[in-house]
Image (cartoon, rainbow, N blue to C red):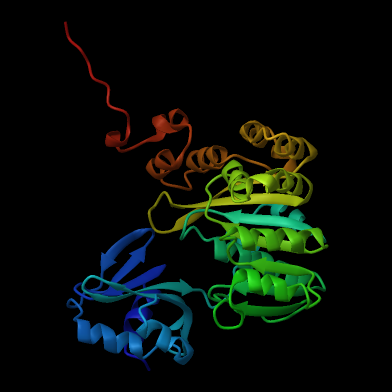
Amino acid sequence: MARIDAFLKLGRDQGASDIHIAVGSPPLIRMHGELSEIKYRALTADEMEDLIKEIIPENLLQRFKDGYDLDFSYESAEAGRYRANLYRKITGFGGAFRVISPTIPTMDELGLPESVQKMLHAHQGLILVTGATGTGKSTTLAAMIDWINKNRKFNIITLEDPIEYIHTSQQSLVIQRSVGTHVKSFADGLHAALREDPDVILVGELRDPETINMAMTATETGHLVLGTLHTTTAVKTIDRIIDAMPAEQKMLAATFLAQHLKGVICQKLLRSSDGKSRKAMLEIMVNTSGIGNLILNRKNFQIPSILQTGREQGMQLMDQALLEAVKNKEIDPDDAYVNATDKKLFQRFVTNPDLLPQVNLVIG
């Protein structure tokens, strides 16, 4: 048993989402979005080096010695499975460990609506799950791949950095590949996947124009492609893809999205009203002919009004999801206010007056 397992297991047993260890401070755990210390002394440089060297995969050891950060999956019988990131800072080594559940949650358990499941019935197209780091994109994608695996007879190829949830082939064949271990990059993995008779391709992150271009090619050649972006709204997602393209390809990118984009699911994780958990809030865009025309004519700024009135098609703005959850007492109203776009809708629910705009009274 690696010595670091004691800290990781402690964090998992307490329900933490992440465990942080670094030179000069005690280990920390993130509970419901907030960090707190484990009752332990500050770690020394020698202790930290001993802890992490026990768990670095042999094929990545030289890369770490050369000064690079590492991303990899770590699993032990005692502590479970984690997504690990090791890095250097001014005082020495540090590490962040994301807890991976031993079971893949279902789409129902995550509260994903029927409109998301309908997207997965497509044989061709692009589905994007977006949000800031740590908002549960990987978990949502895992649930979506799990649904396809259980309900469709497909060849599914995933490209991940690193592999988090492990899928066992059921109705589908699931082939999981890790960037840096099995393929050099997402773009290289996509190029290779097109030769491997895929039906569905999961791209862990559309992080550069080359990868976006390859994902478009995979979609246009008859595949269902799932991917992620670090964007916070459906409109920003569309803009990011088009803006990533060279000037002469922007119109082609807009045409591609108008024709092949199936939908965008934007996520935020907010504290529950009792503060004991976090709940995913979703903005959902389903690509209808109306939205496709707006994308094609570069009128993306009009898309939010369609999301707002598109309940029958399974669409909703983030503010609509937040407001409904606040009224149902499912999330912390102060968190909702901070994360809302139109904050006036949420002012009457705020419990912390310091969050509200200050009014200066002039007495004459």
